[in-house]
Image (cartoon, rainbow, N blue to C red; front, top):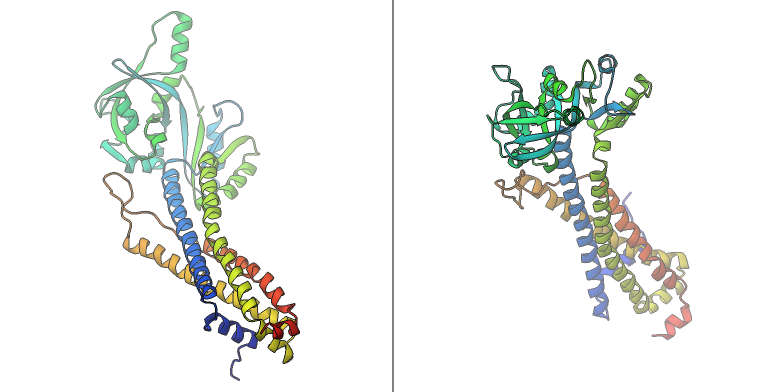
Length: 414
C-alpha cells in the first residue's frame, strides 16, 4: 500500500512554496528559515567549542591533580597514613596511590625571597606524577643527586621568580623553622636543595606555585615525623566515576576523612565554565527566538492572505481542526527543515575543524595547534528540541485564528 501524505501537510507545503500576492510574506518566511538555521548551527558550534576547551582543561588538571584526595577533616595532617593506604589498596578501582606531605615554605636565592607550596613525595610513587615528568622543559626528573644532596623540581614560573636554573642551589625555610628561631632568639637554619629540573604545565597556578622534593627532605623541612602526611592522592579507573568511587571509599574509611574528587578540587573553575556555557546558550538562543517570531508573523500574514481559501475549505466540509492542522503543519515544517539544516551546518563545521583544523593556532605561543572542538550529541538534541518547540509555539496563534475564521466573512472579503 502506497504512503499517502495527509491533506493538511500537502496544503501546508503548497502554502510555503506557492507564488504569493504579497512577496513580503515570502521574504519573511525565507528570513525565518535562514535565522533558525544560523541560530541552531551557531549554538551547536559554540557549545562544541566550549566542550573542546573544557575537555582540554580537564586533561591538564587530571594529569596534574589527583582524581581523589583523602585529607583530614580537622587540621592539616593525617596521623595514620599506613593503615589508610592498606584500606585504599583493597579497592580495585584505585590504580595508583601516593602519600603527600605539603605546606608553604620560603625559597631564598641570594636576595630573592619567594613563598611557594612544597610537596614531598615517596620515591616509589614517582609514576603518580607522570604529567610533571612529561612536562620537564629543563634538567632531569630526579629528586636526589649522586652525592645524596636533596634535589627539587619546580615550575618554570617559580624558577623565573627565584632566578634559578637546573644546578642552582636554593635555601628552603619553613614557617616552623622561622617560628623556632624567633622563639629561641637564634638564626634560622635553612635547608639547601639543588634545582634538578623545571616543569611547565601551562597552568599558571601550578607553574608559579609548586615544587617537589623527596619525602625525607620534606619531613626534615616541616619537622614531621613517622607516618604523618598531609594527604593521600589517588588515580582511579574511570575518572568520571570519581563521585561513585569516592562514596565507596567513604564507607570503607567509615566517613572519618575528607574525600574530594578532581571536580571538587577545581569547583570554582567548573562553576565559571558552567556559567559561560549557560550564558552563551541563552544569548545565541535569541537568534532562534527572533527567527521564530518571523515565523509567527509570516504565518499570521498567510492566514490573512488565504482567507478565501480557508472559507472555501470550510464550505467543502473541512472542520476547524483540519484548518488548524494546516497552519500547525506549515510552521512545524519550517521549523523541522530549518533545524535539520542548522544541525547539518553546525556538525559539518565541527567535523571540518576536528579533521582539517580550519582555525589553526600558533603552537609557538599556545599548547594546542587549533581551536578545540568536541561534539556532544546531548547538546545537539537539546538545541534541536528548543528550536522545534519554539517553532511549534509560534504556530499556535495563527492556526487558532485560521480555525476560528467565519466562512461568510472570508468569502465576502474577496
